Image (cartoon, rainbow, N blue to C red):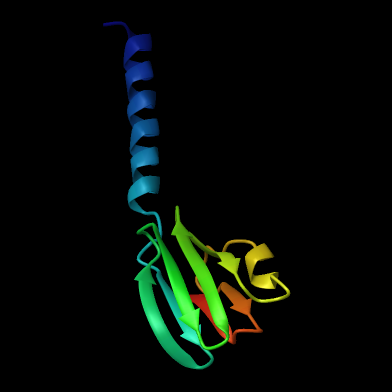
Length: 107
């Protein structure tokens, strides 16, 4: 084995470890908390992908947790601001649907 072969193997292992750490660390133990007005109605780990349909008094919102982010993919509110809000990904980020008095917070 030549010195260059050893360097290539070392770099390949470092890159593999980096990507595994990113996959395992996805979500970093963060929690997605759903609220209807001021009442907590659900709590989900950010690291586990899922789709949740939230039925509310005034309508519904479809929440998508995917690849360490959370967003609203569908809602039956008139203005659709929550659907067009970029996905939340860090602690403290929120997504709000004012017409439904529904919001999502990452904790």
